[in-house]
Image (cartoon, rainbow, N blue to C red; front, side):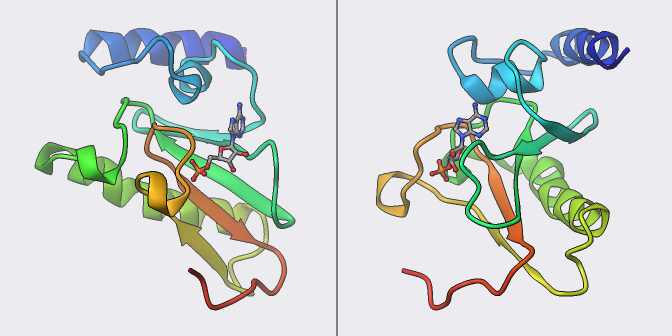
Amino acid sequence: MFRARLILLYSHLSAFGYMLNPSCIFCKIAAGEAPANIVYQDELVTAFRDIHPVAPTHVLIVPNKHIQSVSHAEAEDEQILGHLFTTARKIAEMDGIAAGGYRSIVNTGVHSGQTVFHLHMHLIGGQHLKYPMG
Ligand code: AMP
């Protein structure tokens, strides 16, 4: 049932000419072609649990469209970029961490520590997080 919905979403994305990079692991997860613990998906974004969580909640929210990083985002991507934040809020509520607070991190480029070059937001929470960053 869920797989059927993913296949439907994939054809929907392809029909609208969304760029899917066949060698990108996050594109494959968004298209249902690679395994992941998906917690939320709609026509713009896919959210799944990080394989190496650093806190009780560690979810990655990725655009279904392949955008390499914030440095590669265009004005036409603004709806997707804003949607990452409202999806983070939704998942924080679903995971019961909204009241306590959480961190939303987007790494961009090598100096930031970005290792997967498909734009993604880390949603991290469920405990007191270390600060300052950097
Ligand atoms: P970044 O360093 O900001 O690029 O973060 C990449 C994140 O993706 C890391 O926290 C990884 O643990 C996570 N990650 C890489 N591959 C997968 C995967 N197949 N499923 C879930 N999380 C992944």
